[in-house]
Length: 197
Image (cartoon, rainbow, N blue to C red; front, side, top):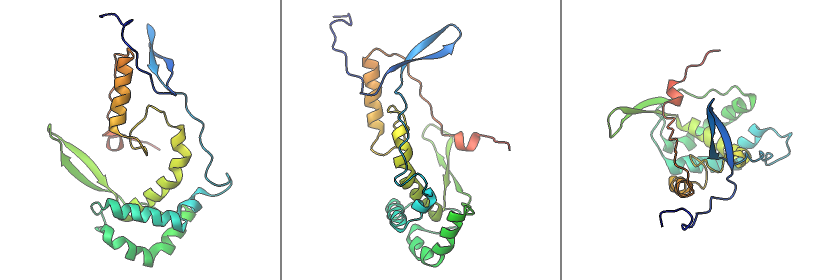
């Protein structure tokens, strides 16, 4: 019973494959790694301007409904989600023109420190509700284009994917004989990176 011969091996999800990755000069390690999918073409003809699709009325209304559903705290300007529709009635024409002219500049985020249970703090950056609206509108246009090219083993912040699915996938890898896990948390990537121009 102690041998692997008698145990049933779980099926690794379709699309996974083994690929050797160099880890040091003394050897390589096999790791499940799906082949990248080709990027989808934009929903319209390739010559269309993506920003035109972002600012289309139906896309913006969908984004507005999503921001209103999510609610959330005000950003640095203090505007609350409930005030966004009225603000857009008076300012949408200018904002749309700035987006299309590529002159729109997002506001700085409001920094908030959230205590962690084990000590320390997690820094959050809270965008203004207007910037959240624009981010959501961009997401709705760009996700169908780029998401198909993401790894099948990637579960973070993707539509139709969850932490529970990631755990199930990890369990399948362990049951298939893999014994090493790399756990990465990019929590400080946006606040800890320095760039130079």
